[in-house]
Length: 397
Length: 230
Image 1 (cartoon, rainbow over the protein chains, first blue to last red):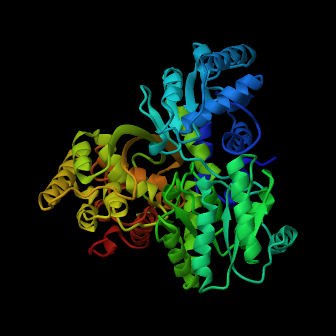
Image 2: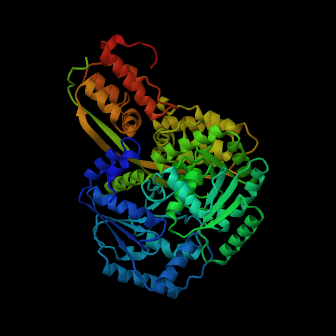
């Protein structure tokens, strides 16, 4: 099992000692996380790493999961999508059932704790059944600044029953009657997706994926959806390709939705006419493959037009790569312009910056190194633990 | 001098900044001016002095969040330059600093036919912070122990003792200088540390400057170091 001391070799100097000092002040306090599931990205990915470390640090940390029937998951999924701005139908009946299921969850789960973090939408209405003791915080991992009105009108009264809320960025928040803290998400540098990887292992994984290693390649990792703009990436690559003999690797998950399938078909069509375009449809748990691709890439692109926090940029910077990213979600907060990469507003802007970097290889190395240090200080799980412990101290003093 | 025992030990304190979003936001320079006039003092502090804590590894081109936003998102280089040059450490109080920022923006807007606004960038979101103090290590009772402790502590301790203590906690000389002067009777070293310019540099560079001054004091008599700017 990974312990906090294992992070000394990757975290910023003094960071682990700082965490240990903070932990001394909350030793034995019960710190409960509640989420809708243990698998997948977002909250579960962070909690899988953070909860064992919080236990290792001496807090009484635990992680509970809400359960429900298909109707519960359908409504909570639609509610989440509507809070993110999507158009969804939310019926009174469905919402009542969702609230009722969480009332049942509240009876089943042990919810007494000094600090309870309720992650995202599925467990959110548990707060209506909170015990008298303890402080409750809603941890929102997504952008709910532009929700569907009905969805927000439904959820807002519940959120206001918490003692505080946490958002990943100020611009992801809505006006509330409670304090809104801002804590950025993080990556785990010791996970399969981000751990150090010998060159031989990288080469072996790339061979397995069918990615030739004879030339530099540009990489975008992300879902094949319009939000990630993979077609824009192809167009930027084509502008670059006139001057540089590079490849483009688009790696991501397809998903089952129609628009995603259409996007993947278009990308495959583009790849059929250009052998230097490689489209890789990966399973959701392809962490080692993504790690190897990011390490082998020359420059990483994240040309999203709509994005959550977009931790793919931090993952790439951690591997010493400059990132050319669209102005969406948390990308402009992660990338220090002209220091660790570039934020661009168009296909042409992406092509311009890619050419600029390819024409100045020393810049690629310099920005890559700056990016890794930037992530070391700002986007590793050690910083995240520091923030969580500080909040535990602040809210329970 | 390094063997002298202090009357009271020096306790290094690191800090964690808990950020809190506020309802104020600006999409153009007029709104920035108006919100800045109304924002809590803690928010002005966060966006100016706090910039120094958040940009630890990378010294960026602007000295505060307001200048950075105007440059990157509004793309008004003239105002960005005028705001960037305001050194928050020279203002006696946060209200003095607010007044200076407001007057610079106001003066700039008076010269323009229209108000520059965000076209392709993002709005400015006002925030404030809560500082959680974290005592680090055993207290130092001699100059040599102080030197050893300072070399190892998290760089947030440099911020806490050199910036937070001076501005938000009202200890105008900063904790290092105050301790050296009050507990170790080293007024000259204290004065040199007090004169270190923390503006537009990194916490690591400030730490290095303090260490070099302390080293000089340990190697010679306290007055043995030069009298030029630190």
